Image (cartoon, rainbow, N blue to C red):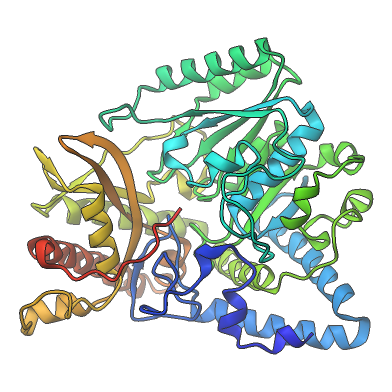
Length: 523
C-alpha cells in the first residue's frame, strides 16, 4: 500500500506510457495538460486531452482514501479488485449498457491490443487488420494493428522496442491502412471509402485471413466511416470472417448507438478522457456479453500481453481468462477512471434538453467566431444521416477543425505545431518585443485546443488543422436551472473561444520570431 501514499498528482500521472511524463520546462505532459486542476486555462481540447477538473480531482482523492480503508479489512489486492468491478457496474449504468462486459486499460491504444488479442481468439491467428480513417486515429494504431509495441515502454514501466512484435500477438497479422483524406487533403466521397473497405476485405479473405475491421466513430476531425449500408453488406457477405472493432475513443456518439454496435456483435474502444474530459489516459474495451463464454475459454495467452494487462482489468465473471494475468494494481489507471466516471456521472445528471441546447448554441457560436476571423478557415462538417435520435445530443457537431490562413494559403504542419505549443502557455516571453496593454493580456492567457491534424500536401509543405472542441465539461459548467444564468455561462465560454482566436491571430503575426518550448510530438 505504500505507493498509495504518494502525492495524488503523481499517482494520476503514473501507470501509463511515456506520453504522460511531465516536461520539466513546462510542468505539463506532451498534450499541455497538468495532473491537477488548472481553472485559469481556457480549455477546448477534448479531442486530444484535458487537465483534470477540481470535481474529478476531489473524487480521485476520496477514492484513494476509501481504498485504503477497505484494504485494512480485506487486503489491498481484494479491495482493489472489488473496486474495479464496481467501476464496471458504474460505467455500464451511466452508458445504459446492460449487455456488455468491460475490459479496462491505461489508454485507448492499449485497448487496441486487447481487441486484437480477443479477435485472434475468435477468428484465428491469421488476421488482417483493416484500419478505416488511418489518417485520423492515434499514431499508435499503425503498430497495434500489427500486434507491435507502440511506445518505448509499457504502462507497467517495462522497456520495449517500439514497432517490434508483442510476443505471441503479432504472428500472422498484417494490416491495411485506409485514410479518409486524399493526397490533397480533401475528404474522399463516402462511396469511395466504402468501396476501398470492401476491396480490402475481399483481398484478405481470399488470402485465407480473418479480418479485424477497425471502423471510425468518430475521428479527430469528427468524421465517421464506413456507411451503415457498407457494414450491412460486410455482415451479409462474410459472416464469421470479419470482426468489427469500433474506434469510439472520442465518445462523440449517443448511448443508443453504443448499444446498437454491441447488439451487432462489435467490440467498441472507448475512453473517459476525450469528450468526457477525464484526465488522459483511461481506456476500455466494451465486449458484447454474448461473447463471454467463448472469450473465457481462451486457453493460450500471448506472452507479451502480460505486460499490457493485469488481472483486475478483466471482468470477474471471466474467471479462467483473468486467472492467467498477473495480480498487479495500476493505481494511476484506476484513479484516472475514477475521475472520468465523475465527469460522466455529472454530465448525464444535466437534463437532456439542456445538453442538446448547450452543444447546439455553442457550435453555432464557434462557427460565427471562426468565420469572423480573416486568418481562420473552418473545415466543413460530415453530418450523419437522419438516425431517429440514436446519437442523442451528440448528433450535434462538437469538433470544429480549422486551418490557419486564407483561401489560397494555409499554415504548414510544423508552424501549426509551433502555434499549438505556444498557445498552451504564457507567451509574453515568446517574442523579442516588450508587450503592454491588450497585447500582453492576449499573450499571457494559456489556451488548450485540439492538437494539429495533418491534412496533406498543399504547395511545398504539408498543412494541418487545429481544433476547438466542445466536451462534457462545457455542458456541466454552464448548466443552471435558471435560464438567464445558463445563457450567461454559455456566452462566457464563447468569449473564451474568442480569446483563443485572438491569441492565434496574435501568434500568427509574430510567428517568425516565436521562442517555442519544444515538446515531444504527441500521438
